[in-house]
Length: 330
Image (cartoon, rainbow, N blue to C red; front, top):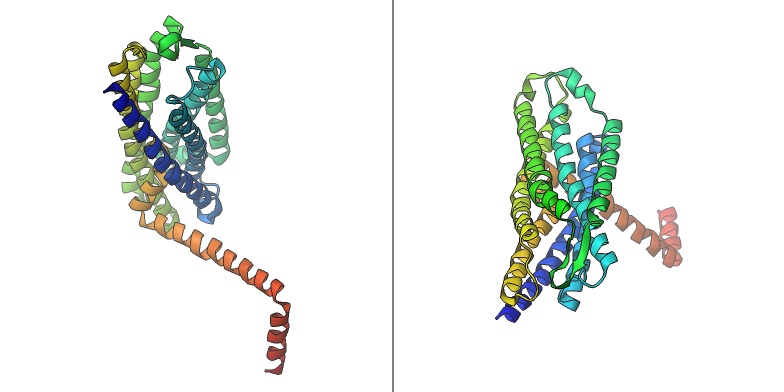
């Protein structure tokens, strides 16, 4: 029975991982293109944060599919066989997760300031400050993840787990419930709601209509992104707190199989979090749909057709000469 459950967990991880990778790969690339190539979003701090998050999520897709392939090949993610991989996998994973969660927080906070009715608060945040804050926060997450990774060790049938009891207590009591769970959810939800409240009053201010519509669009997108993140972050956070406090040995075959299945389901929710932002924006915002259509059809498709026509003219110079002669005769 335990073997069947393990097989189900492996198959579920593989198929959900492949689906998530496919949609996440496409969605995050399109997010990056939209928020970096359209003139409307240039030097916009909220767009900058969304771009950073999309790049981070793009990296996560490759880590996720690597672990999925390892699990399918070896029956586990190979962290129980190599200490170096055990530590590096958790260092990289923690860095990506923290960067994603707190970039969403920075997006919500920035949108609150940029829509605030007080001019002084709106001028407080600049694109230069956004870059500095992002760089410093990523450095902090990398340092924290390296420190955390040093406490991971391979312990027999338990596999790759935290070996230091003090750090284990910190992880289960503060890091996951507060630092990864409650704190980012609270910050993102609170400031996105405050930004939404600001936008409802934005009609009274004398600002250009283009800027007003952009603020309304970005605020709605940030609010929905924060809500979706809260829904998909919470289950895995609760699971990881429990499994850190009460690790299950591979020798307990039935319990281990059930834990693996639960882990696969909750990880698929995390994968949705890292791959769904583009599709959330697409469903939520009609303006974003028009912007994506303009980018893909008017810019890239037209450019692709022009390049194809150039190639055809270079391949068939006789046709080009004949066409030119006809034009001259006309």
